[in-house]
Amino acid sequence: MTKFSAPLATTAHPQLQELREILAQVNDLSSASALLHWDQATYMPAGGAAARGRQLATLSRLAHETFVHPRVGELLENLRDLESEVDSDGFEAALIRVTRRDYEKAARIPTEFEARMSEHSAIAYETWTRARPANDWNLICPTMEKTLDLSRELASFTPHEHPADPLIDDSDPGFSAAQISALFSELRDELVPLVREITSQPPADDAVLRGHFDVKAQRRFARQVVGDFGYSFERGRIDATHHPFMTKFSLGDVRITIREDDAEVSSLLLGAMHEAGHGMYEQGISPIYEATPLAHGASSGLHESQSRLWENFVGRSPAFWQHYYPMFQRAFSQFDDVPMDAFLTALNRSERTLIRTESDELTYNLHVMIRFDLELQMLDGRLQIADLPDAWDARYLADLGVQVPDYANGCLQDVHWFMGAIGGAFQCYTLGNILSAQFYEAATRAHPSIEDDMARGEFGALRDWLTGNLYRFGRAREPQQLIESAIGGPLQIGPYMNYLRGKYGAS
Ligand code: ZN
Image (cartoon, rainbow, N blue to C red; front, side, top):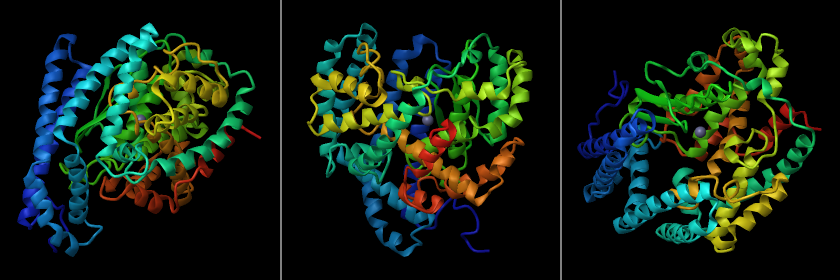
C-alpha cells in the first residue's frame, strides 16, 4: 500500500503541515462565523442583534489576522520547491496554489481600508433600509457616491484592465469584465426579441398556485424531493428563514433554509430545490479537502449553475412531475382536478416584471444584465451616480418594455449595491443559468437515460455525473478548467437559448 492510497489527513512535509494547521484555524473561525450567521437568520431573538454583530466582527478580524500573518507568507515562499516537485493536479500543489492566491489577494488590501469599507457598508445598508421604503433617492445618492469611490479604491489595489475585474475575480475567478460583457451582449441580442415574442401573449393563469397550503405539508414534500435528489440529511438540515440561503460549517454539516408561506405552493419547494443544489455541491466535495481553502465550490457562477440546474432543469420539468405530481395531488387536495399540464403551465409562466427576485426563468437574465452593464459604467466613469435612476429606467424600457414607476421598484430594489462594493455581485446569476444548460446537456450526453430516470424519481446518474465532474474537485481546479473538462468546450449561450426556446415554444 502506498502512502497516497488513504485520504491525506496529514502530510509528511513539516512546513506544509504547519500551513495546514494555520489554515484549519482560519477555517474554524470562519465556520464559527457561519454558524452565528445561520443562527441569526433562523432562531436568534431580535434582542441578540447588537451582540451578534460584535461577535461576528471579532471572529472575522481573528480569521483575517490569522490568515494574513507574515508566517503564512513565509511558509508559502518556502513551499515553492515542494510545489514544483509534486503532481500539479494533486492535493498538495492545489492547496499551495489556491492558498497563495488567496493570501496575495488578502494581503494587498490594507487593514485601514478594510475598516473604512466595512464602516461605510454598515452605514450604506442602514441608509438603504430607510431610503427604499421611503422611495427617497436623495437620501441614498451621496452614500452611494461614496460606495462607488470605495469600490474604485478597492479595485485599485489589484492591477486590472477594467475596475470591475478584481471585483468579478473575487466571486468568479478567471473571468473579466470584457469577457462577460461580450457573452452577455450576445445573450441580450437573442433574449430581448425572444422575451418580446413570448410575453406578447397574455401570461398564463397561475391562480391555482395561490390559496391556502399547509406549511407542514409543503415542508414534508420538499424534504422528500431534495432527499430523493441526493441532498443528505445525515450531513445537513432544513430550517425556516426570510431570505433562503445555503451555509456550511464543515463538509459533514451543510445546511439549507427555506421561506415558509402558506398562501403559495411552489416557492418553498422550488427554493428548497435551489438551495439543495448549492448544498449537494458542497456535500459532494472530496473529504480530503476538509478544513482547507479547497473545501468550497469553485466560483459563484458554478455554484449558481448547480442550484439552477436542480431547480429548473429538474424541478420545473415535465419528466420530474410525471413521477411527483400524483404525490403532490395527494399532499394538496386543491390539485385533485387540476391536470398536470395546467399545473406545469402555471409553474413555468412568464411575464415582464419590475422586480428581479420575483421574475421568471425567461426574463430573469435581462434583469441581471442591466445591473451588470450599469455597474461597469459606474465603475469606469461613464455613468454618474446621480444619473443612475434615469439609466436604469431607460434600460428597463428598452430590454423588458416596462415603465419603472418609482425608485423602490427601480434601482433601489436590490440590497447588493448597499452592503459592500459596487461590482462583481450580479454576473454569477446569469453565468450560472448559461452553465446550468451546458452541464445538463453534457450530463445527458454521457447518460441518455437521465430524463427517463427522472420520470421514475431516480436522480443517481445525474448526481453522480455532477459529483464526478464538478463537485468533488472543490476549488482544487480553476473554474475555466472545470467548465472545459466537464462540458467538453468553452462557456457558450447556445444550449441555454435552445432550452429556453424549446420550453417556451418560440418560433
Ligand atoms: Zn443561489
